[in-house]
Length: 275
Image (cartoon, rainbow, N blue to C red):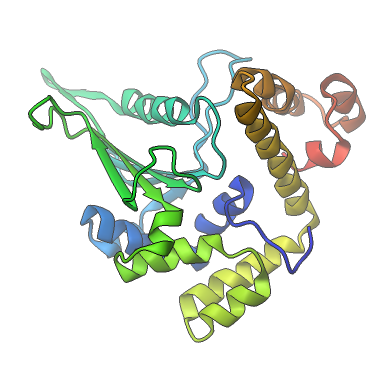
């Protein structure tokens, strides 16, 4: 990965950056604006890796980009949708409902359900809308909200950059859209929070272990994009990349023999080491 060039829409970069302390103030501020949650609560919330519980050993891994746990009853999922593929929104919804199901508890005769908000950062305009923010909830035909436990918000990055929206939300959308370090530095010079993020991006872009993971995600994203454009089912590409990654992860629980894992998965040793 060239140090001058960077893709902040890459899943690996998005996860690494926005789980970090350097990005905490920025992401907490934007979520506070979107949801009306106290910013301090978001700054001191838990920012987890997003690995969800598997029911079967070889079940495909359910991995959200970021799960923000405010408390047991309130969680936020952040998903970077850097490229469009056939089932991306179904997959994200499944993650959300998995978290809801895992968080259900009983107090006396009453069941308590956690509230989950899914915030999608969309690098495409699937819905062909002029809006920058789409807010989906479970409603009836007259607009009544049935339940508050699930909400899905889409931030259409292109529209946010090109239209007038809240300045802090627009600023983050512009940040995510810039493709090289020099432009990032020039654009955000003097902003201590964004400059801290840029320094973190530079650190990641020179970390050999991270670069391997970044490159694997880029290749995977291209596979999915090609599949969508040519009409192939997304599952075929997942069989080519994601299934190999999941098998490698399972094997790594029992062995560090990278050559053996490479033999059975077709992944490179560098890719396996980055998992």
